[in-house]
Amino acid sequence: MGNCLKGTSNEDISLLRGNESSSDNQHDVIQSPPYRERVPVYYPAPNDRRPANQLSEEEQIRIARRIGLMEHLPILAYDDSINKNKECVICMIEFKIGEEVRYLPCMHVYHVSCIDDWLMRSFTCPSCMEPVDAALLTSYDTN
Amino acid sequence: MSALPRRIIKETQRLMAEPVPGISAVPDESNARYFHVIVTGPEDSPFEGGLFKLELFLPEDYPMSAPKVRFITKIYHPNIDKLGRICLDILKDKWSPALQIRTVLLSIQALLSAPNPDDPLANDVAELWKINESEAIRNAKEWTRKYAMEN
Ligand SMILES: [Zn+2]
Ligand SMILES: [Zn+2]
Figure 1 (tube, rainbow over the protein chains, first blue to last red):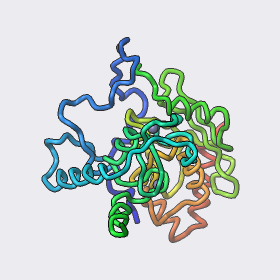
Figure 2 (figure 1 turned 60 degrees about the horizontal axis):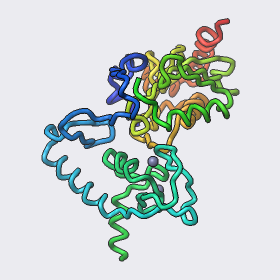
Figure 3 (figure 1 turned 30 degrees about the horizontal axis):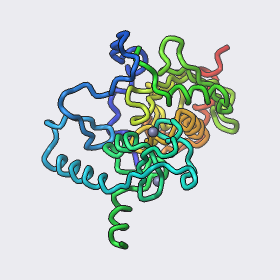
Figure 4 (figure 1 turned 30 degrees about the vertical axis):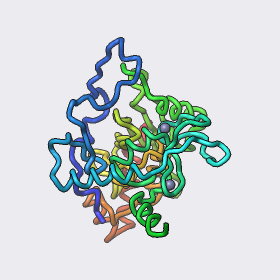
């Protein structure tokens, strides 16, 4: 209970209008990647964004393990006869036949870059909220 | 301005084409990530008859992180504090990029119909809601009349 009392910073307050540093340059036609730092940025927890050099050893190990697990998630060509989802729920762009998509153990599929971005924050399926590593481990046991 | 992600454009178009009943959400003219929201107080709730203004902002890494939402109209509710901040799990640790602006607005509407004093944000309101629900509901109606019904 009361999970809202902790972690309520005033961060939410001045957030809305006009606090985004808009680097509105004319060459910005292509969406620039959200990360501009040189040091890679990781998410030890969904809302905890930190550069690699500010992670504890334990967090580094956990993130490395997660990246290792992600490599086991199959990438296959999108096939509209198998997949009911016509679009990736993360970016809302339609899948093209033959395009590479990543399969989670629950059989939900996403664009590789879309789902990998999310899995680095939370190791769950966005659609069914099933934890990915637990499912992966059970699938290893049964195979 | 950097280009708006396709997802935000699509969500906005779908929201305009099929609005959520009882809720209006209009993007700001100068900032497509900022929405002016008006939620109608649900029937059979102490907020019935009120029109509640909110602001919703899509952060730069949306949909990887949740929209930021705040009540602008004062409201007497155990899960909404004095500053209008909302205690709703999907806006915090239960966020998923499969959720949308629409889902968030529906959840806020549902929170008005079903206040949850066991997961409070406004402590004194939640306290009263638990020990004397009828008085809390009276206060909520009073605030609705005072702050959400002007003109
Ligand atoms: Zn995608
Ligand atoms: Zn799933």
